[in-house]
Image: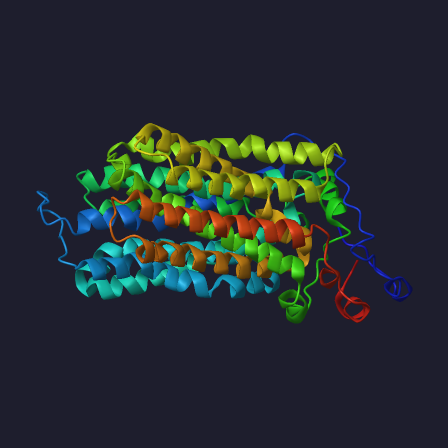
Length: 477
């Protein structure tokens, strides 16, 4: 909804962040086009995580010297070469985060999401042939290209959420969308394993992943839209409901990104601290805790597919009521937006920290360790309504840039964290050495959470609002 503004109206002072009141009242039907957008973004995250995780499973069959399947080539790659293949995805993924958010402000997020997904799909389909003719070096280049494409997804998702998610439904919209990645990663491991062992062999892992991506792309081309204003079949009632809800904080025009204000923003750095703490803690939970349980407690989680998936299935299921509860409490003015962001973040990061401390002192009890791990990962579902939406609170107009920077830095911490294990653990069976890792990780998570609770904010920042000169030149308010 655009309001053509006269020159006289353009001289009216814009509301300051303190004057903007977030109204959570008002509803518009049960199911609308905004729900379809959230569902499509859920499927997008499901698809890209399937495309991301498939290599972790397929590379086992690709390099299996004892394979009895003579129909498919096995590669004699060293452990160092395999590590390069597995890590190459993040070479592209990390560098594009902030630029992706910026591009989402100037170009169609729908189109960018469609094009980058299709490129990633084509690259996935090329992996079997490229691996055979180009070896691990060409495979690394392809995976880096996939990472570059998938690096667009999360920043663009937040660009779209800033236009589609009414304030009273923001937790559910973003939570549902982001939760697709949890299910995608959970389902990819067993499904890719079955495909690798099927008559199609390991190449079928990549062909099936590509087919999944094509199906999503076709649906997105037909159902997706940049905003309610550009959707061809949305009802006027739903369009007005969404746009009126967001009228005080967003503007349809593009403005110069206030880089100086963003980089010097204390609330934004507090948000980054929460991202770093979460990335570090969750990385240790999902990558190193299974090794600890296997080496110290002599219990192989990976041998039991259900136990491997259980923590993440619980996280996926629990995220839905957690996000609904956050919206319900805010919409009914039971608690403030600030309360939800900081308490939900504390439950998420505090739960992980406590679980890691417990693991360090749990003794030889694999059942208790599995319960602790499941509770910790499930508690992480609170992040979807915690700091993970705070970017939208601070600056709906520049949310893609904020998410790109923060998500990029968080992924750096997820890479660094497992490397620190080698500094403390030279004997995988030593409980004392693992305890040091868990205590350090808990300390990082608690510190990140404390910084966010003390210095974080849910107020729309001053630099989100265009100044008077920009309004005169560009904006229809």
